[in-house]
Image (cartoon, rainbow, N blue to C red; front, side, top):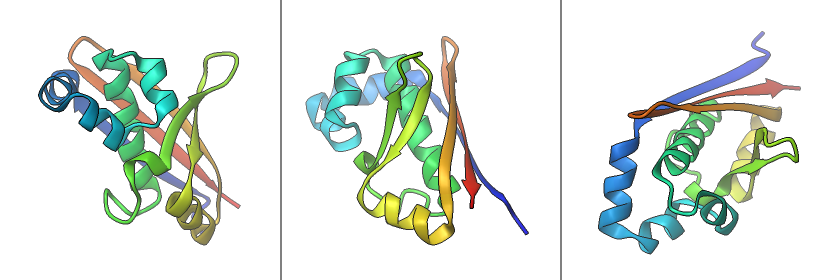
Length: 123
């Protein structure tokens, strides 16, 4: 029996920077929540890490980018600064159907890449 569900994603920071440059606010509001936009303040490495986290969560939930909206997966922060995942709408429903009661996330970036790893605990 499987007791975890895992997702990982890596993305080029320049790809996010280019998309932000091309589509601006339209891109931000399609992919990120208001709190994520406020936290990132247009910084491509932070935006890319959150983009990777959203993709990693979707993989852990077994949906890929279909069936769950980008803004239904949100990267929040604890007081300590540690990132965590908040699910909304269909993402919560999917996690409940799978029996996932917690998602842990780790984010990192270099000059060129951002990566996110997500582990979902199955109850």
